[in-house]
Image 1 (cartoon, rainbow, N blue to C red):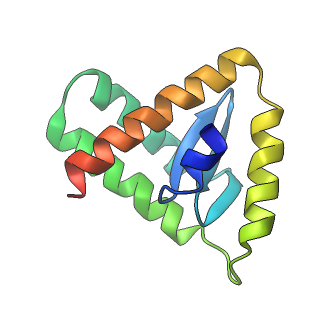
Image 2 (cartoon, rainbow, N blue to C red; image 1 turned 90 degrees about the vertical axis):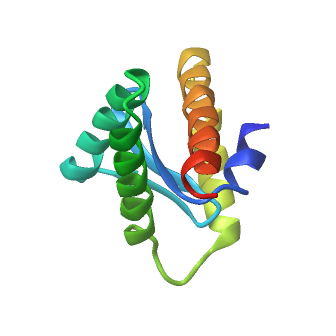
Length: 114
């Protein structure tokens, strides 16, 4: 289940339709920072072009943006409820695209953070 996977992963910035969300075990928050959202686009372009050094750089930037977006105090039940609500609002196409992005994140997390 996607919710369970996201709640075990560090935060990352994902594109859902025309919006962007920080999702992970410590965060569920919409993002409107243009620098961060532009980095998602660049990450996706570099990743699809197999440009390893650049993909790693944008991956690390997106992880950093996500960490900087964390809010205190940490509210695990609120994060889970908000994420569950967000995921249940997705249509099939949005859900599949998010699943693909999470898979790419998991692959790159193992590659760049091991």
